[in-house]
Length: 186
Image 1 (cartoon, rainbow, N blue to C red):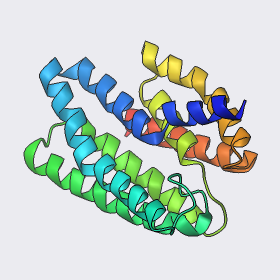
Image 2: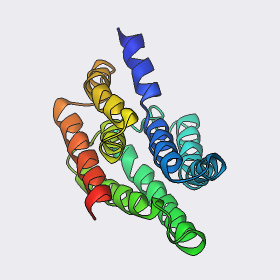
Image 3: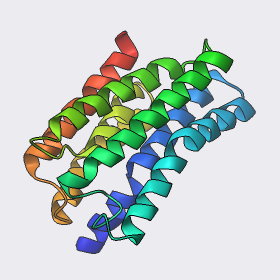
Image 4: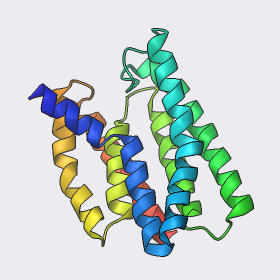
């Protein structure tokens, strides 16, 4: 069962959720080439720096694993994530100011800021936050409904691999849903 839980944690990783969310939203609004470019831009600005950080921190022994599972490991993750999102927002504002991604980046930044602030007391599940964000942002589409159905198995997986408590999963879900609602209504 632990191997299934690990597999679900990988398949529903925040990096994957970002790609699914941007790709699905972009495909509804842009040509295929433009949608691929949108996904590539988001990955270049956000996923690449975070992946480099994760690999570096694990290799040098500063982190127990790539999930930054220890609460003390999270501040660096949030700092790099925030800088990456600010850089992405600057790029979008300069070169694609009418892009649908502006709201998504701002909402994601807000979600990360809330999770970062809570880190002093609790380690909010970013897996749940990003999965709930993607599901809520894409609600109304088959992908959004499919992601919503994957939230309970993901919560089970994160508990099964002993990365989070139930409260951390619930808080991550709430943060993600709030950010998704912000994308739709603000």
